[in-house]
Length: 85
Length: 283
Image (cartoon, rainbow over all chains, first blue to last red; front, side, top):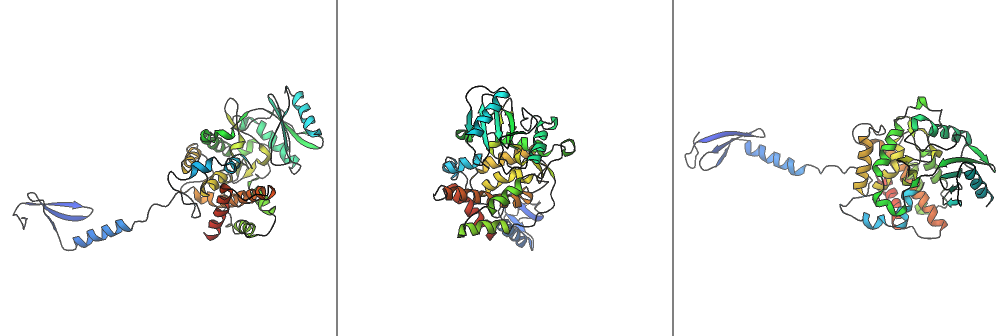
């Protein structure tokens, strides 16, 4: 197939199940009917993917990386708790 | 105090020398150390036949290198109290929490849980669930915080049938001592039960936002890497969820009791446990 823009030679690639023709010369891309929709669906699914669940129970405290453990750690109450029944 | 002097005498009989030092405990148990020997008068609430079996388990070869072995494998009766005699070990200092051996603790629990029950003396039930129920039952007053803690405990889901294995029953950092290696101490709640309860206290601390997630990951990771059998395959929280909820209610009840007796407000760490109870009942 010839590139409709520069008449260069077009090569077929497959990306995630979508056929893409790309021009060797101008790098232009040609999509077949329905393939743009397929790519759009894949993009939407990517953005809608839920964040991985936090490793913990549903009722766990929200953990902030580098959060407030520092000052709680030194509290008498917390240290006492670590050592008592 | 008469009992303390009698315990110092027992320590001397078993080779302890020097001035007796009484260790602070929050229960009615009394612990006296003389040099290399520690003598403990157990709580009057403790069940003595159960303690005998627990002590023999600690002395058994199956638990060598896991539980501290007693100097005397029998329960003595002193001034009407059940008394046990132990070699002294070095506990973790209150100022050493940054370097506490969490992984060692986890690996010891993994080995304890894997111990063959059939080779040990017949043991009572492990004490974890009873301790949680007792702490909530002893809550006094009927304010909103007390009601929240009771509700957290009452609304626990029905337990699934879990493994029945050797379980420490009351694990925290005060239950580790260093001799030539780290060992677990205190068999008062040792017994047969769901071993997930031994991991539930750190799990509850983590879920309350108190325990640094990195420390929790190290603890849990070491337990799983050592082949600890408490949590099965897949999401560790499937088995941890129920005991961690129960222990959150227990810790909140104990914290509230301390604050009330000391006539003070809850501190920030204790408040975190109450907030965790709030999230549990809304979950």
